[in-house]
Length: 440
Image (tube, rainbow, N blue to C red; front, top):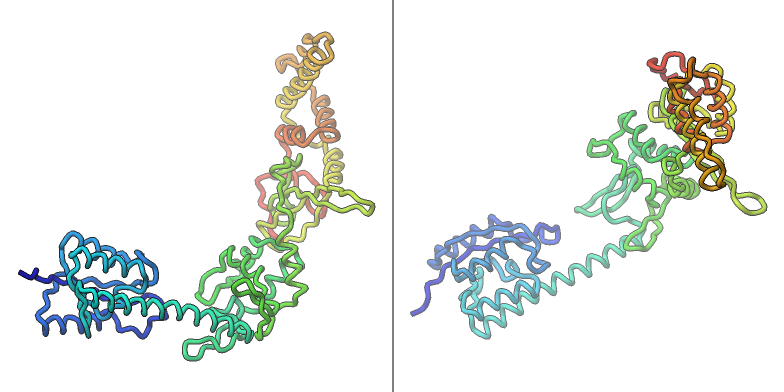
């Protein structure tokens, strides 16, 4: 006795643009239900899926159908055409394998049916293989078309920031300048190339002036860097690893673009790793932002390289702050002149003096094998310093500023109660630490 056929109706439409002309899912279901009613087909399950069939095992609902056929929930499939089921060898093999096992008894399409007979299975494989061939050829043709477009000087895809696409029949025919946003794109390149702005500084500037993309959103930091690295803006574009000459109007010169690239590959600032001695010592007198160190390198005329440390405003408060840089040597000289006016935590600095002397005596004893003079440390016991020796503390501060290492200087700065400001390359004492300096 022939086993009763129980069908699963499967309707699929690719989510990709190359199948826009395929009958929609609702239309497929309507036509197949009409066929089922006319032919008295028992449909026990209906599944609809919007997913490409190019890759094997990539469709969750199709994989579910194969599983449920193995579990004998149904034993036949109703679908619009063979290519709705498979456009790849893996999924086709799974269907044929289920037929060989006697679990999938029939595949019914709108115009024909396939059962577990050699000829019909062979025809099913031919039709699905033909669908795969069309798929593969379509990919080759699309790539060839895109390459031809690039050779014509037209960049495929959406135009980058500062440009607009002129479309015709869903195809890009021309790329023109976006007059609303192009001037800002030019300024982005100029600020980085000529004014040495970082990507974050550019973003703060754009957010402050209210710049938005075509979708009305703020420009993300990653998009700013992608824009700065895009050769499209000086007249060329890259596609599939090949550089093409575009027919669009450039926004910037090639020289400015290369200037920006050199700025982007500047050696990362590693002042935290280097432990510069005066990190965080003062704020900017113009905008109130922190003053940070930066190391610069200069190649010497007769070989070698010289290193210089400068301190400058971070510009995190005022993006256009023009406070000039100051050298570390100038910074130290000005701090030495301010020592008489600096307020010091004498307890902490006295303890540091004691620690330094103790290290010196241990060196005498353990390395030079000389007598350990522990008795000399008694005069530095905090309880014994009455009154505390302010002159000694300031002399020690002067010694560290002149000859101390970066870590020594950082440590001694923690003993200072005085705050400093930098304005016009001049270090001065901040009279009211709680006062917030207004932006000029």
